[in-house]
Image (tube, rainbow, N blue to C red; front, side):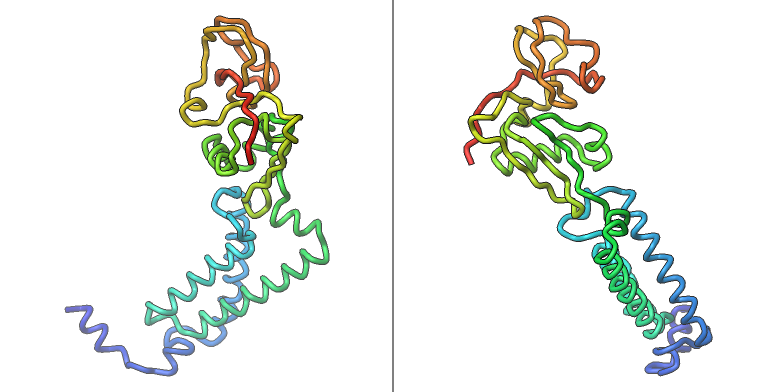
Length: 242
């Protein structure tokens, strides 16, 4: 009943309501500009802090652009009390910020590194850099899944792996003659680290992938390289077939 009364009070095709608002002065556009700047910076900051897991193939600016403009367009589409000029102001300010930030990042590489991040070296010579790995907000399962799509069976085949600023991975492989035994990444093996070794031999730390010769029996209390106690796995030495 009350909804019907409210709708009846709305004058269809009112240009004042469509373009500005019956409840806000024209000067409110300046506040919208300020809100747009603050929300854009807040969105960039939130995405920068959250890591690169959800930002694949897009820069942080482009991802934030989609989020903010999508919200502005959606509100202006479905809410009768959201004037079109308010949404237009959001679009103008955000696009101007995007162009300005692109100019800054092209002219000042340090600004680009600060705002969008830098590539992170995650794997070097078949071993995982745990601080960089943690900073990238990845899990072992996610990383291994992407490597398996590149026909990688163990980390001894990987010479370098970078997480790019877009969240994608770049992988450089050892030459076949330089490959070494490494941590296997098959799910049925990787998900079952050992804490009691049935036989002596080369094993890889489940956390950092460093390889050590270990005797049969209980594994070391801590990995000598990373200090973690996540278990060990027998190394795999299968050559990679591209």
